[in-house]
Image (cartoon, rainbow, N blue to C red):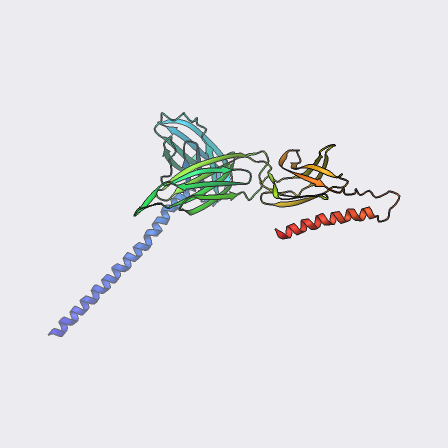
Length: 393
C-alpha cells in the first residue's frame, strides 16, 4: 500500500519542480523585457533628437554641450538667466543643420556687473535646444551669487598665455591619524577649454586626478595661435566627494615670444653663437642682432636670420665679424621680429686682443687668395662649434 503513495508523492514533487522551473523562466523573461522597455524610453529621447550631456552655470558664465541623436535643420541654443521671475539675460546661438552623432559646445559670458546680484538670493540658468520653434530639450540649474568653493580643495592659481595654461591646486582639509595631522586626499576631474570669443577651439579632460598635497599641471597648446587675438582659458574643476563643480577663467592676448638662452651664448674675437628657444604658439619670425660698442668710436651692427620657432623649438644662430679693431666692447644681443619689436635681449662684454683681418678679395685677382682662405677657415670654425654644441644637447 505504501508504493502507490510514494509514486503519487514523486509525481507531485515532479509537478512542483516543473511549476517552479516555469515560474523561474517567466521571471527571467520579464527581466529581459525590462531593459527593452528602458531602451524604448531612451528611444523617446532619441525621437526628440537632442541630449544635453553637460550644462554648467554660475554668475559669470554658462557652459553647455549638446549631442544630437539624429540629423536636424535650423538648430539653435537659447541661454536664459533669470532671478525672482525676472529675465536678466537671454542669448540665442544659431547653428543651422546638424548631423546625427554631432556634439555642439557653447560658452556664454553673462556680463552681469559684479555688484548687481548681491541683493538677490539665487539665479536660474536655463538651456533650450530648439529646431525652429520646436523645443527638443530643456534643462535648468540654480546657483547663488557667490560661486561655490570646493570644500577640500583650493584652486590657488590658473594662468594662461600664448604657450600653455597651468593650474595650481592645494588641499584645505586634513585628517587626524593619532597625533599627526595629514592632508585628506581628494579626487578631482579637470576640464580645460580654450575660447576665442564664445567659440571653443580646444578641449582637454583630465579625469580622476588624485590630489594628495599641492598639485601643479601645465597643458601646452598643440596648435598655432593667431597673433594679437584675445583668448580665454576656462577651467572647470569637479570634486568627487562632495560632488561640486567650480569654474575659473584666465584671459590673454596671443603674441610672439622667444627667449635667448643666457647659458648658451658664446662671444669671442671671431663672432658670436646665440641659441634661442620659442615660448609661444605664435611663430617667431625674425633675426638675431648683435651690436658691438667700443669704448670710443661708433658701434658695429651684425644681423643673421633665425629659423621660424614655436614653443619649445630651438635654433642656434652663428654670426661672424671681421675687421674688429683691438679693444674692449660692450656686446648687446637682441631677438627682433619682423615688426622691429625686441622680444628678448642679452648683454655681455668682449675683449679683442688681436684684430681679425677683414676678407676683401681683390677684383683684379680672381684666384684663390690667402685672405679668402682665412675667411673660409673662420666660417668653418663657427659652424663646427655649432655642430659640436648640437651633439652635446
